[in-house]
Image (cartoon, rainbow over the protein chains, first blue to last red):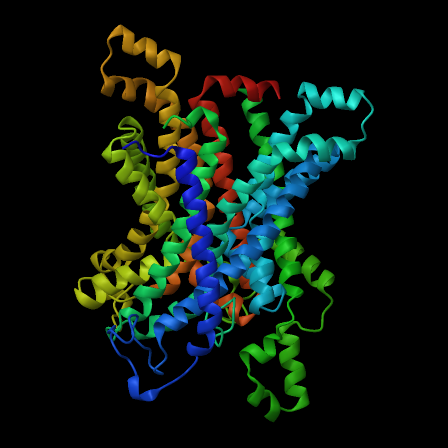
Length: 274
Length: 330
């Protein structure tokens, strides 16, 4: 039997990712309540049939907590990646079209944001917003646009010289019309791929910052919170508290990383024969 | 040679401006924070029982009432003279905290940087040379898995396996607990730094390996490689003589650009291993609202990142004659 081609396989992967996203979101919404139920008769159980992920020191079911945390992380990831990508699109296009002075300022700004290590910048922005949900979202959203903005700027600079754009301008279309009808459709694939590739970074940084204590507060069932709590129980041998939630996070992130890579390769015709 | 120096000077000027921007940004972000340093560090209960005068004195100490602009200008003018202020939490000059912390962090990061660079380049070249076959698939899969793994979770896993189960390595800190400073040997330090450095190296490999592989694939499809093959050169010789030379440049850039990620990773890893380095100090300063210290750390790390970029730019010229001429024209 012949193997399905790259395009088909990517489509399957897109559907799979969407299904996982939906399933986790639904399960998380259903489990948020179950994840906070404490039952001191079943404290510190190792993984067993009734509790596949075990239970913690308050008798909370770790599977429910993991799902709830994962769905929260996914929601934050989608939100921040989307905001970041839109910021990148706006700044990248502005840098390429609004003249040299704007370009200089924006490229300086990009260098500035890239110069501060991501974690530190997210920490600082999160502090400025008073930590919590707003802090994390603002922090991750405002620190991840740089590389995509650079990419899109380069793309627009190239497109501006393209014959059909030049012709459209000579024919008297306004800048806005040119941008809408000729630039945007061309940028859309790059933009979407960039968006999906931003997503793993966003989730990972959200979890990291929350783990350090600058993100979501400890009553929220985020993966970062679960993992940072598990650290105090590590030395007593409760490995399941950190292993399974982390595995779930890695699995989700890896799925989107692979998806983004595939899409990127589909859009790059030179490497399609692989 | 003259234009090289001019090029470097221009870059240095830009770097100084960027550092100024970084310090201003960090300062504004921190002073915009609605979190009250008194509440965080003294606590509601203690504040309730304190007299007004004491509270006023503490507010003075944490600089709550001064206008931000004045504070920033004050900080800047003494920073230019080499005085970064006094850490509010540690109660010693920031420069000293930075020096001590930097000392232990630097070894960690340097080891991880060199190790991940060499390992990443090797794996990338191997994957690119075996494109499509099982070593390539294996390395690619591994890299994607590693890049999807949060550094702190990897650190937790390693800690669990090597320290808790096997008991080979210590649980944390950079020296044995309770040992006198004079009694700490180099072996002790190495044993304590091993796991953090290992974690950082593992996480650093993915990016450079994947990138190197892509570049090598591109090189191997080029016309000059086709010609070399037609001349009868063997595959290893092609990879070594044509591949490595062309792959080196992007690898250098990427490795120098990864300093930012490395510092970010070291913040997380030091927190897990309670390793008393720069990253851990940053977390403490951030949670405790220690503005001078966090500002100092941000500026220092930004300087490291910009310094890395500058090194990459200068090395470019040394490695690639095409770029050398391009830089001269600019």
